[in-house]
Amino acid sequence: MGTVFRPSLTRPMPAGAVVTDGVARWKSKAGKLRTAKAKGERIVEVGNRYLARYRDGQGVVRTVPTGCREEAAARAVLVQLERRAELVKAGVLTPEQDAISSHRRTTVASHVEAYVASLNARGCTAKHVHSQKRLLTTVLDECRFRSLADVKREPMEKWLTQGANRTRSARTRNTYLCAIRWFLNWAIDNERLLANPLARIPLADEKADRRRQPRALTGDEIVRLLEAARRRPLAQAQLYPRGWRKGQPGTSLRPETVAKLERLGRGACASVNSPPCASATPCSTARARTCCSTRASRRTATARPSRCAPTSRPTCARGWPTRRPTSRSSR
Image (tube, rainbow, N blue to C red; front, side, top):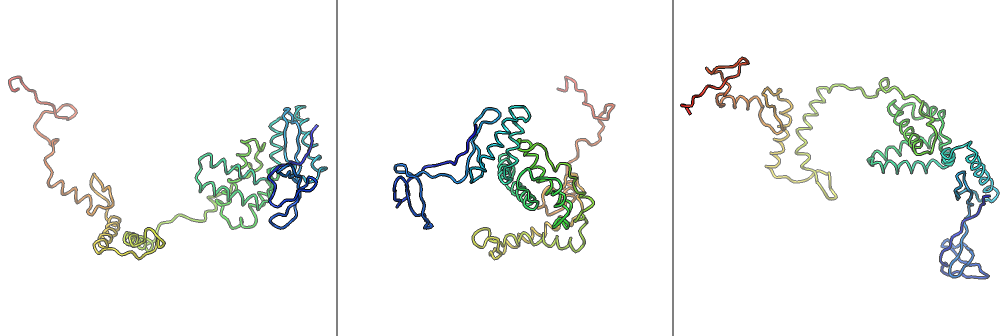
């Protein structure tokens, strides 16, 4: 037979408390009169909500909060807990189903916090964790899902087609849907839910609703891009790297440094506008000032004769030169 009770805790006697007939009276910081049972140099405070203590279907004594301030309501919760324990003993429910039924009544905020902690323990980046929490919180708040038992397919489908989602792209709507799907799959893996009620909602067609079509750059955009690339080395060097003016222009540079940075910008634009490299060894760095073909021609003009040039040496069937026979006298 289970029981309900209000938890009690002891703490030191407050300053200025007066004990009369075993009852301590004092004023709180807000100026309100407070009373509690005195026990020596400490006071005993009783909680305002009831706890239920019962034996579950596996014979383990459990103490769970009822969330009730009245004893009658707390005993009604105790009756439900004992009934579930009897169903587990009779084999109607499994212990896993009994544990899931307890999680279904818990607020969804506690499940979200556990889900975020699981993502952090899994090694996900802070950006990914923050994004998933934001998407998940938005769906739960706007669909008014207060517990896992409230998650249904109909409210989710209605939310995806109304309000701000009317103007959102298919990819954005799929992002929200996938965020809550992953959360429910995690709840299933952790025995907090039996099935995912949103698993059969189809994703929107992203190819049919593309908001940004890929295109080639126009001539004006290419000119502005090259101009920005030319000015970037000097403009970047003129920014303050630290201090309260970090990121603001105004640093003083020496004339030779300015000239060097301007040449660097012109060289970057020249490497883009130059024709493709014709040599066998293309340029490996952006700092090259001349084309590889020019360097290759210079090397060719001053190169030594190749060892593989055709000679009068005999060749084999594949065309490779054979070693000349040597006599012992020649050695």
